[in-house]
Amino acid sequence: MTISYFLQQLYVQRALIVSVLVALCAALLGVSLVLRRYSLIGDGLSHVTFGTMAVAAVLGVTEMYISMPVTVGASILLLRGSTKSKLKGDAAIALISVSSLAIAYLLFSKFPTGNVSADVCKTLFGSSSIMTLRPEDVKTSVIFTAFVLLFFVFFYNRIFAITFDEPFARATGCHTTVYNILLAAITGIVIVLSMKMVGALLITALIVFPALSAMRVFKSFRTVTICSSITSVIGAGAGVFFSLLTGLPVGSSIVAADLLIFLLFLLISVICSLIGRTTQK
Amino acid sequence: MKLISCKDLSIGYDNHVVASDLSFDICDGDYLCIIGENGAGKSTLMKTLLGLQKPISGELSYENGLHQNEIGYLPQQTDIQRDFPASVKEVVLSGCLNARKFRPFFSKSDRKRCQESMDLLGLTDLKHSCYRELSGGQQQRVLLARALCATKKLLILDEPVAGLDPIVTTEMYAMIERLNKEEAVTVVMVTHDVSASLQYASKILHVSHHPLFFGTKEEYLNTKIGQAFLGLSMAQEGDGKQ
Image 1 (cartoon, chains in turn brown, blue):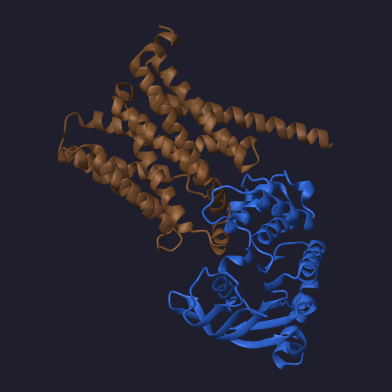
Image 2: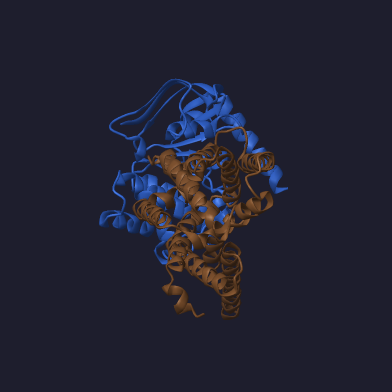
């Protein structure tokens, strides 16, 4: 069983395409979220998605129909309201995330839809369902990624301005509220899409690792954005293959790959600063 | 020529009035210092002038074709910026955004304007340096260059020398004065530094919930409040030195 054998399999191709694309979107968003101190937004929102999945399972509706609007709504609420609302950012995230977790588990226990602990474990840590993707899933993620990429290319300069200094952007006539809501909506959608891959507990990794790795070494916004996209794609690809070869869970493999990349970048930055110090002397 | 005119302006947030009865004009070429104690409404006034906050009552009007997005702004530095990966050029260029309207990318003229501001403030050699690795004074110069990209008409500076050492503070003031005198940029500065205000400003607005004074520097020095405030600040500085 070699890599080339796997690459010929349709299900592997689909899994690869979807995970690479979702990882790419998450990395792009991650740079802005990490810099604005919203690293844990992914964690909070994924718990909301987890809650909506429980509701959907109980009602017997397709998950997407409930989880997408609710998660996007929660995302807009958390990311937009933080400047004005009485509940400050991290507290609001904590509140929403634990409430959804509790409600979801209550629902799962009250209306068992099969094996409760297997269901819960699957949604928390991602499932092998990434290997059983249908062509529609691939289509959704391709269309969505194209949309996110276009958004980032066209509004790159504005995203930079808002992330770096929101009051200045607003004072010089940038419609920051509109962009914030758009960014929040995209964050919500990316999180719903990545639930399948890595599960509720590991989503934060997809968002923060690439950005953090890139920031160790690169020093301009452009290079950090590009580098985090590339490392995220590599991490997702490597994770999927590792999981195929070993039979270990996909989500955790991707996160482990991202962690390795982060450690590598950390090492590079330490070496660079050591070299810098000796040349200064 | 008037740029901004305020009449019986009351400012504050959530319907809580911080300062009221403010009537003053900002004219072309002015160097106006807004001074007053902590919590007197200086920052709120500045945010209202920038259009970040709505006035509670009274009138605030932009005159002679001044558009709200033609006001440059030097904000205080935020926590986020301390570890932000951005090159000097990226930061300065982001000041050109307001002229972009809905066009997504920067044009040649934007890049030229960015280069000019960097030349003016002596940042050309630092162009590719990382913002977070610069000294406090250099960072302030980068933000000032960004504000200049946004406009050459009116700059609002929020405590531009906060946290800078004395030598860099003097340099910063000299630079602001040069912009005002040579480049004809109208400057509005919110500051704690009364002695610097009296040295550089052409007009003073002293706010303390109600406007205590608005007029030229010379007039201010002849009022009781001016003398009292000046004496107070000198006494404080004396304390600080001991």
